[in-house]
Image (cartoon, rainbow, N blue to C red):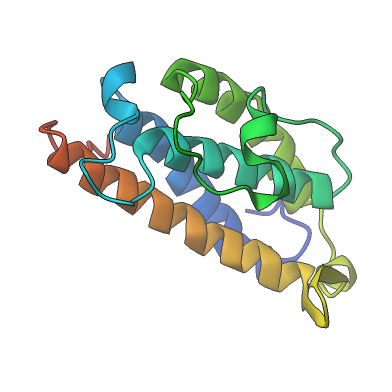
Length: 164
């Protein structure tokens, strides 16, 4: 991890690297029909969860100066929640965006200095957090969403997520 500028980011980058292939593993072989299913609940389905996960990486990269968006940006911009009656994209479209943003974001995260990590990010009226806090929350949320999709795999009758 000597290529990480701030020692505070070493554990974050390790988790980032660990979780990166999990996106592929947790979504593999789930049909397009199944990613739209909510099983008579109000829970976010796999199609929304996968897109929100991709959007989070793009959003974090934009906080670090990147100007790109995922293909499904209109469905997720401004932290938009799940929409009833909308067909969400194929997993392969999300995978392509995941593969695109992952190395870009990793490079940006690796190059952050301790001073940059203290920059405040406005999150809403009278609420902000440091860039480091935002990154830490994002890594936590990635693991959380991967876990939710892993549960959906089982609920939809698929084998559990593989780890290798």
